[in-house]
Image (cartoon, rainbow, N blue to C red; front, side, top):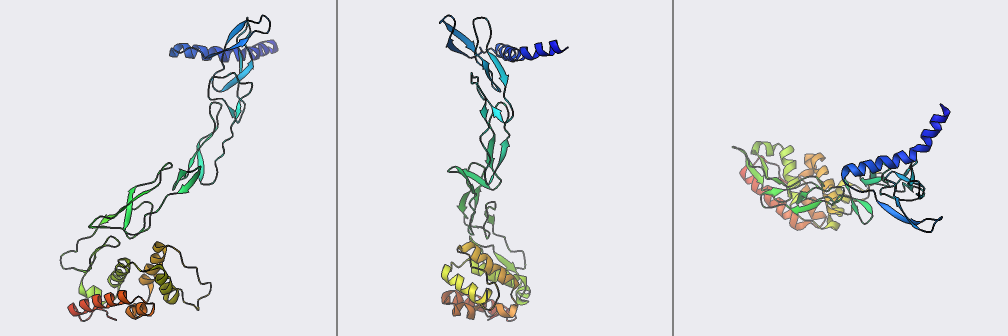
Amino acid sequence: INYMLLSLQSLLPALLLLSSVLWCDSAGDSVPTYQRKDPSTGGTLTCAKCPPGTHMVAHCTATTATQCAPCRDDHFTELWNYLPRCLYCNIFCSENQEVETECSARHNRVCRCKEGFYWSNAFCDRHAECGPGFGVQTKGTPKTNTVCEQCAEGYFSASTSALDSCVNHQECALGQVAFLNGSMYHDTVCGTSEDFAKGGELYRMFLSGFFSMHRMRLAKMKKFIARYIHKSGEERRPRAPKQRGPLMDQIKTWLSEAPVEQLKKLPHMLKATQLNSMAEKLEKALHEIQQQDPSAPSD
């Protein structure tokens, strides 16, 4: 039995080569070859290469075929070859990458960018986000970045996102009034005078849309946030973001949570931070609504 096992082991390289030869013949392809000098005669020998997933153990001779052996763990050969040893799987997935195809005897490890990232300049960068007024035209892939487009007439985007597209302005239902026309930055604000007069959700949506449609300077946005949202007396006062989108998100969050009595003072608050033009427009808009319904909130 031991003799039979030893015989099979000695035949394994030949069997591997034979199986690949038969496979190539069945596929209509010839086995790739290479030439070497016969050390005994000085003549030229044409030897069969070893198939992918194996490497050469011994060159062919005038009487024996090329001897091949399988690649050991974490090693590979992708092509027909006569390498003395298999190649090491030397690709390792780095930060923001994940394994797409694990290392095997026939190929090296293959990595791809994780969800939300794409391949750029030998690194996986995060997909760009489209800011307010812009929607996603084409979502990012592991190989391409997000493509943004400005919202067309009748569409808007109020978010900063790598996924959201521009959406249609809503049409006010029968019996509702458009308190604020839609823009590329916000939806149309619809409702009834009674709802607006309550100073609830509709009133806050109106103020949020009003802020969105006015392009405040970053310095003045930061000043407004520092003075009224992150008050100087608060402990662990957070650092203000540097981009317009996150700054506006802070203002919108504050508008959704602040007491109504404080929101009624917004025109005065805007003037105190040198946002005079914006304060005047807000006063005018609230005055027009007040004229339509005397019970509506005013400054």
